[in-house]
Amino acid sequence: MRLRTKAKSLLPLRTLRRVREAHRRHVFRRAMRRFQRSPEICLQPGNSIFRDLIYGWGNDSWSASDDFLAACIRHALHVDGPILECGSGLSTILVGHIANQRGVDHWALEHSTIWAMKTQSCLDEFNIDSVSLCVKPLADYSNYSWYDPPLESMPERFALVICDGPPGNTRGGRSGLVSMSDRLKTGSVILLDDAEREITESWISKLNASSEFFDCDNSYIKLQIRAAM
Image 1: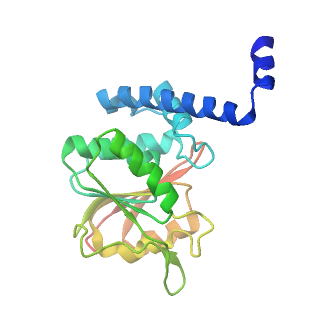
Image 2: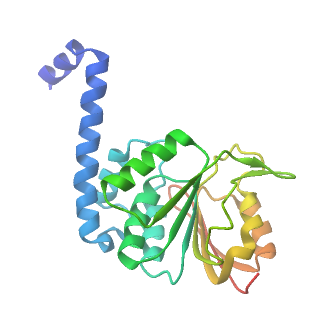
């Protein structure tokens, strides 16, 4: 332990960062190979693969919790139509792989070019071509900011929505999702990370949806559309 601490003190900070990043990439690739062989092993949060994927992805402060990721995987394994994701990241990679296996279209909206490049690079590395990653700055609407999706190219109805964006400090939070309500089919499931209870209450009435709150490390909410919009 002393030798390791001494070695760290002797190495330049830039070298330490390169070593740390190389280790993260190694851990992530190893965990992804295990996940790709059998996504079902990640249906329960708290397992070592989730821990390695989150560590290896290298965005500890912003990555979705393993509880939320497990819910995304569970629904993606049984979804009966296209998937819409608001924001991109580790969930895009994991759900995208399942969509690849099942022949399901997966559309992800992202406003950050830098973040989209990281996500797309990983999609390419693992041969995940089911994801259409749409990158445009957030647009200003009447009382909120939201993505500017290419609606003319997207599916008419989505069966699963994974909402982990835009960032919480965005004007109007994630209320802009309601503007896409006509793209949700009866029975569609919405998984909302970082549970925004105030927004959710308004969605329940506007979307004619049922709701279920999951109180875990990073709470999330599941909404399900009762009737076509």
